[in-house]
Length: 240
Image (cartoon, rainbow, N blue to C red; front, side, top):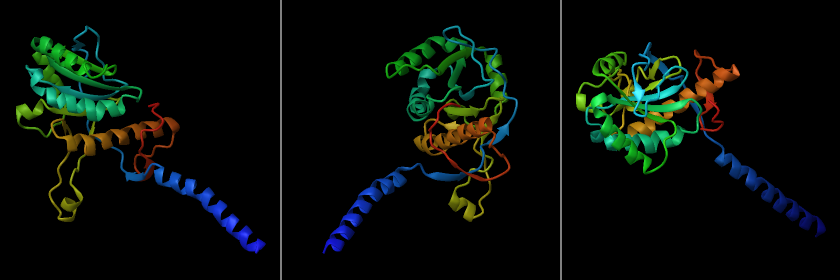
């Protein structure tokens, strides 16, 4: 009888010990296979011709930037900008060197201030700058960006990922699994539509996490750009 009781006690203690371990394993961040986010375009124009609406310089070099160019009436893009704040800025603002820069023509400065005030009513935007520049400078900047957008109205709702070396990042092949299976014609993803929540949540968010992981690995000396690797793509260790 004593041996049976001891056995039961041992089993109960074992279960009590293992349950938390199993639970933690379920909570442990998932591991994904991924390929480094591709450089789709090089030599994006630096923003020396622009300044923030508060008169501060805006810089791309040595920062990881989400960059967008707004229209003459930036309040028309308020929904897209709010989506960008909620789905991208709030998720990645904890990373060092991360910033969002939205640019508009000088004549739109007042509307840009109103848009900033509207966003600030939700929370302070420490790593977000609204900048202005003349039309020639904006044209030069947009020409240095690779885009898949044709319609002008849609163009103003797009943002781009620019890395620390002024390279534009994205995907040369953005086909879905069903499209790959059906051998659909390849197409790229060079800009992200802020009016489409799915684009921000499922594509841009993932691409930014991949890029931050790349920089973390480079700093540790473990990055190998030619290999497909397993890596933890959580937002832990926000020291990039």
